[in-house]
Amino acid sequence: MSTPWLHIVGIGEDGMDGLSPTARAVVESAEVIVGGDRHHRLSDNVRAERIAWPSPFDAVIHLLERHRGKRLVVLATGDPLWFSVGAKIVRALGEDAITFHPQLSAFQLAAARMGWSLADLETLTVHGRPVAQMIPYIQPDARLLILTTGAETPAEIACFLTERGYGDSRMVVFSAMGGPDEARAEARAKDWKAQVSSFNTLAVECIAGPGAQVFSRVPGLPDAAYAHDGKMTKQEVRAITLARLMPMRGALLWDIGAGCGSVGVEWMRAAPDARAIGLEPDPGRRALAAQNAAQLGTPRFDLRDATAPEGLANLPAPDAVFIGGGLSTETAEAALAALRPHGRLVANAVTLESESLLLALQARLGGDLTRLAITRAAPVGSLTGWRPMMPVTQWSLTKR
Image (cartoon, rainbow, N blue to C red; front, side):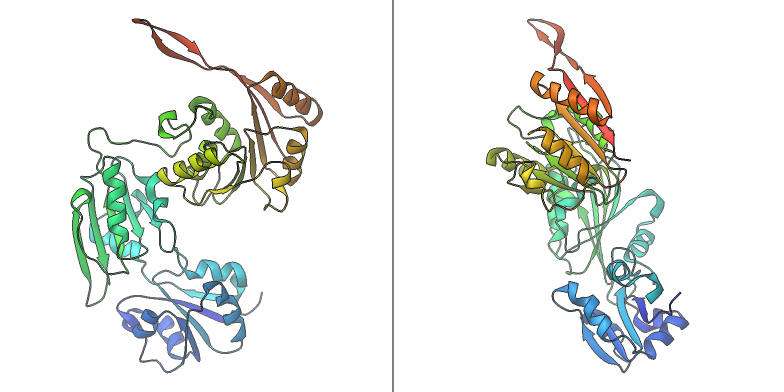
């Protein structure tokens, strides 16, 4: 086990006075301190070489390596491993290189001021990320703590809430928590007009009004939730498909023949940091997929003008593959070869020709075949009867 050569210290608005004796001694003895302007201001009584975060930020690892051998300290806000720089640095340098000195996080401070239990709420960040990523968490009675990306973020989130029928939701913005300039602004989402600082933490207590949109993060959203041209994986089939694809934290899906994007969108909604690459050559459907991704809270859905199998070359290895369009033997074989160990492949077919292809693939490669026949109640004149949907043949397997 190597000796740590880098200290990452969390610091709050109370500056050096709020640090533990050990963390304070580390900062006071530093030869080089790396951090943002705010961090340097909070520790300005310490004599050391000061270095600002590099631009682009990805250069930070090279910067730290250059100063290896010196008494080197990185200052971060609060807990360096909770939506902060510590996670990026430890992935690059390894845990043996770093000693962490966490401080109270903004989440802990905000929860204490709201009187909320951290175990009973969602902690999110949209700092430097698309704000729409918080949309899947808008649900009745949900409590959210959100690290924002700027002074305009609370107003943007207030719009998301109001548009979805949650205008009565309580919103509280905290800034400079724990310091002499701590401030608080509060209003209902539909009345939000407050001017707040650019560095803030937002607390939201979601209150659903009459007719509010109520969507779970569990796959199987109503078909009406999507803009589509009629050709899409329907709700019941989609729920079964996602169950077999098994969304997991940080996992990557290839959505081949993405259409309006329903499978990729629900994959990303279902697990934190789940990623999806959608291949869709039709520009109209690709536009629908982008619209759905924005409206349903997955703005990072990576949609590409490509077809399979050619478009699969040089993509990062997937944890799961869904083939909803463009099915061919070559595509299935390429997808299976690219899958990571324990990866899942699911292909759906509605035509006799594509079904026969799945039968042949299953006979040669194994896996499971399932026939999905869904029947919905629908008006028959003044009465009601059962209206069958086109049956779907589904082939699924897990790479061993």
